Image (cartoon, rainbow, N blue to C red; front, side, top):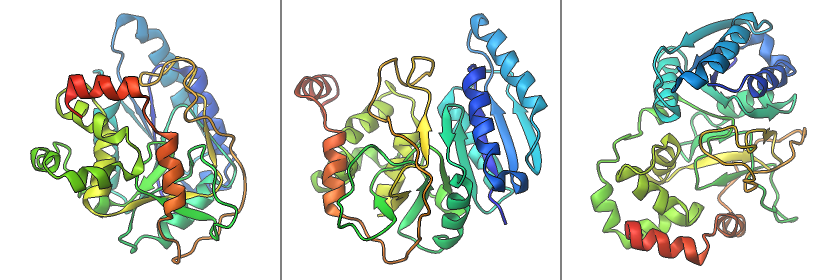
Length: 295
C-alpha cells in the first residue's frame, strides 16, 4: 500500500546521507521500497564523490527493500528523472520522487501516501508535493492543502496515468506559441515559465520539470501542496547542477503539521497572485529573454 520512493543522486555524499537519514525518520520508510538512481560521473573530477555516494548507497538499511541503479554513463538530471520514474511506474501504481538535497519532516511520507491515495481519481490533481514555495497563505484560506498551476520538482509524487500523458518533445510548441491566451494561462504559475519552456525547446535548457509543468497546463490540472512545507532544500550552497550559491528563492523551513485532505479544495486566485509575485522576473531579465528568445 505504500508508494515506492525513487531517490536520485549524483556526487554529493553529505547531502545524500542527510536526505536518506531524513527519510528514515519517517515511520513509513520501513514499509517502503527504495529505488536509488545514481548518475555516472560527467568528468574524472566527479569519479571519487560518485564512488563515495554509491558505497554509502550499498550500506543503507531500514527500508522494506532497496534497488540500486548505477549508471555507467552521465545521463544528466533530466534524462535520469524521466528514465527512472518511467521505470518505477511500469511496476507500481504510484511513486514518491526525491533528489539528494532534500530534508523532510517525520510525517512527509504519511502525507504523500495519504494524498496519493485520496486524490488518485481526481483528474484536477496531476501531482502531489510535500514542499511549498515561500509564499504567504491568506489567514482566511480554509484548507490544509492547496492547488497550484505549476509542477513541482521538490519531493513530489504522481501516478502512471498522469506520467504517461507527458509529451517530452512538446510537439505542439509552435501552435502553443501562437496562442496568446494559452501563453497567459500557462504563466498563471509564474512568468518565468514561458521563457524556460522556450529555452528548453531551442536547446538552451535541459529541464524535465518545465515539460512536466507544461503537461499540467495541457491537461488543465494542478500540483497539490500542503499549507506548510514538509520539505526544505540543502542544495542552494553551490553544490548542485541547477542552482548556484546564494539562491534563496526556494528557502523554507520544514514544518511537521497534520494536513487534512479535502475534495473541496480548489485553485485560489489570491494564492496564485502571490505565487506569480514570487516568481516575477526583473525588467532586465525580461528584456534579455525578449531579445534572445522572443518571449
